[in-house]
Image (cartoon, rainbow, N blue to C red; front, side):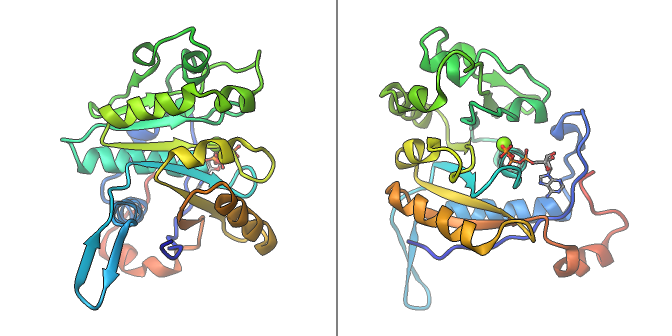
Length: 252
Ligand SMILES: Nc1ncnc2c1ncn2[C@@H]1O[C@H](COP(=O)(O)OP(=O)(O)OP(=O)(O)O)[C@@H](O)[C@H]1O
Ligand SMILES: [Mg+2]
């Protein structure tokens, strides 16, 4: 397993407009997202000696979770998706909202909740119908859908979930999966083994060490690889150069 890597992020104000409209290619946040994207892409490379790097396998499907709720998973998954899509116009990027209890990705893109993953898993919609275009031509969204009638754990545990992720991997170059927190519910343990790895989002000065340790333990127990840790809402102390070199460098 590669060592967890830590990336700081800045504060971000939320409004009802699409994250895409407020995205700033030159912001400090975008720089951090590029760093995160690069680290993920190379997370399965092993370093031997000083220069030699061995290619093990590409990281394609990455799941984002956290120890507890409200640590910024959906926000970071969305911003990372936008960054990768913008920087790689030749690649098709898919965001999957697998948090069937508190689906959020569609809100960040001001799109509809249904049909989505729930409907595909219940066979009331096809994957083609459920995957939505966003305003970026190479960024796509599979929203959560409506899972009111059935337990999300039971839905995700169906063998159809694996088939669905495989089908997505065949068609898309990168898949970012927004998942629920790992401690309160068991959905991540069901999904994580089907992915290439897990990123843990930790809200700075909010989540206690014991919770993060428990969350990491649960990732390992699910037989998934922990690719790294993102520390969210870290103060801007490390970005003085960005402030110095431009007048306004925040995304909002
Ligand atoms: N770096 C940040 N700066 C400012 N606001 C942020 C940041 N990260 C997240 N937020 C805001 O905090 C709130 C919670 O974020 P988000 O919905 O991404 O958390 P979550 O971990 O997905 O929550 P849940 O566990 O409910 O799914 C949102 O309003 C989001 O816009
Ligand atoms: Mg969320």
